[in-house]
Image 1: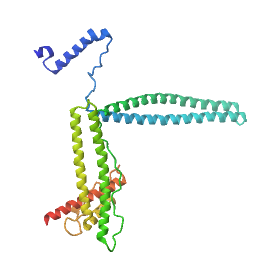
Image 2: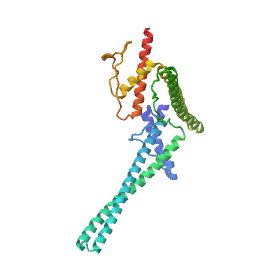
Image 3: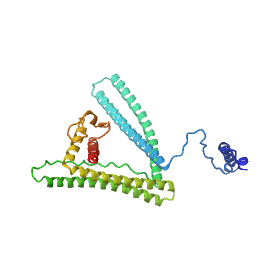
Amino acid sequence: MWSAKFGKNRYEYGQILREMHTSLYEEVGSKYGLERGDSIDGRNVQHLHKREYIRKLTKEAKQAEKAVKGLQTMIRKLEREMLAGRNRLKEIDEALASGKITLDRYEAQKADVLKLIAEYQSKLDDKAGKLQVKEQELEQLTKDVSKVRSVIQPFRNHKVDFTPPQITEKVPMFGTDKWIERQNRSIAKQFTEIVRKIESLYRNDAARQVESAQRNVLADYGELYQLRKDVKTLIENNDGLKSTLETVLDQLANPSLRSRIFAIADALAGGTPAAISSGGGGGGNSDSDLRWDGRRPDEEEEAYRRRCLMFAVGIVKRQHEKKSYRR
């Protein structure tokens, strides 16, 4: 029976397997000079998904790179200190030769400088040794990351810098319709360029992943399934961006909605409480004050203004839809 040979549960099964491995090593492996693998008993060992392993290696590589740069900076500083010490020795020698200092004072100052140089040299040797170790570690991590990425690569976090569309011209006294049409075309062009850039970046990433997975037979079905989910999410996100773009353009084409959007966005960006009336009038009350978390600690100015604008667009959209529904 299975239980008689391999144990009644997984604990007995594991113990029997370990005994079998030990017996195999003692009777066969050791005879031919083979080494036995390290046991994971008592060690905090866990299986990592490929993507998690890639993130782990990438993080360790960045930490090693940071350590290398730090050690290089320390070494350059120590080398400057040693050079300054040698220059100080020359100054002391010249002072003795010109009779500016006595021999006793010369020897005392020289001993102090030599002691400092010896200390700097000792620190320099220590940092150089640590730098060599870290450089080797970084090189190995870089190779490991490159090797793992040859199987499958995660999506990159692209940072797309752009200036939020703004209306900079004043409204003319005549030809308002043409002016609005011109402004809408300009805003539509800018939004389209932004969306196309985002689509291109992530589409290239998706194509790169698919190509990598097709080339490497080690890419298992689970990875390919996750890849399909990422591509599907990308398509859905692009559809959402397109819908948002159309909504923004529709609202900006309406003068009253456009003025409300910019009024709310300016109030939020300036840190001023913005009261929005739920009715048709222009007034507000305490119940209609916007709940806004303000600028985040690490948020850049352009990103904050962009978030204010999009938040204002959402507020006006919801109120406009609610008003249309009541009518």
